[in-house]
Amino acid sequence: MFDHTGLSDGDEVDLGGLSLRALATPGHTGEHLAFELLDGPRPLGVFTGGSLIVGGAARTDLLGRYRTEALSRAQYGSLRRLAALPDATAVWPTHGAGSFCSAPRGGDRTSTIGQEKATNPLLAAPDEDAFVDRLLAGLGSFPSYFLRLPEENRRGPAVVGDPLVPGLDAASVAKLVQLGAVVIDVRPVPDFAAGHIPGALSIHLRPQFVSWLGWLLDPGTPYVIVRGPGQDISEVVWQALKIGYDVPAGELSGGMAAWDAHTARIPLLSASDIGDSRVLDVRQDNEFHSGHIPGAVHVELGDLRAHVADIHAQPLVVMCGHGERAMTAASILRRAGHVGVEVLEGGVGDWAAATGRSPA
Image (cartoon, rainbow, N blue to C red; front, side, top):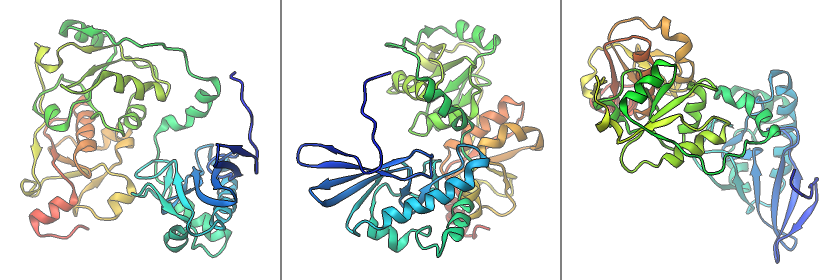
């Protein structure tokens, strides 16, 4: 335990000309605090954390369904409190821009109190019951590892020092796979499509990497990394450690150029080449319902492993919004023995532009 000074509602911290005031804003969690930045008595902005976010509020269901309604009602009071700040007050949330913690999932990072009062549908709710209904209706799925993070954080992380990921030759990688390790290929979609280790799981290294790693790789499963030129193994390690995962068991030295056994491929299709192919759309529910290719089968990527047996073993095209999630889904299907799997480059907008047809 580190020495610290606990803060409660209304406590202020002097920053040398500016000050921070703690504001109790329960909802995302029961103990949540926002921090108002003050220049003397004048509010400059508020670090809203997981309370008010751009276009919505942070979700209230991460502590279990039995606490969701009570936290949602607390979130109502917290947002009303923040909305009472001057309209010019800047809003600096922790979540947003596609975070699974936001409801609904918006695209902007910052705002102002006045802007949120004018455009945030939750702040337009006429009463607490309507607010709760709107908030809960906007909750999509979230990575399963979210539910174990509170306990991980309470225990504190293991001391890892400067973690070393050993370089492995192809034979050593193959041996680890035989013993139960999973190959995580973090290269961009076109590189994975052109050739990868059979059975590898494609999760492109990007800011969302950690969410899909935690959602699709069971905790405690050893894994081996395949990366491309210019990709930093320390970024993989850092993202894994943030959710309590172990350091990779190793990485393929020299990348795919060093793999001397059979390679697998997954074809990429342009939107104009889909034709009448069967389509599997792995986007989130709200994305799918905002517009999709008519007749597409819908299974969210996070749920796909549990529904692989429900996907008919016949050729299909997998799609998402850009291609990364689709390739991850295709790699899951290939691991399960599906053949004839292809991936759409792009999304439903590209399909509409190429075909002249309207999404359903």
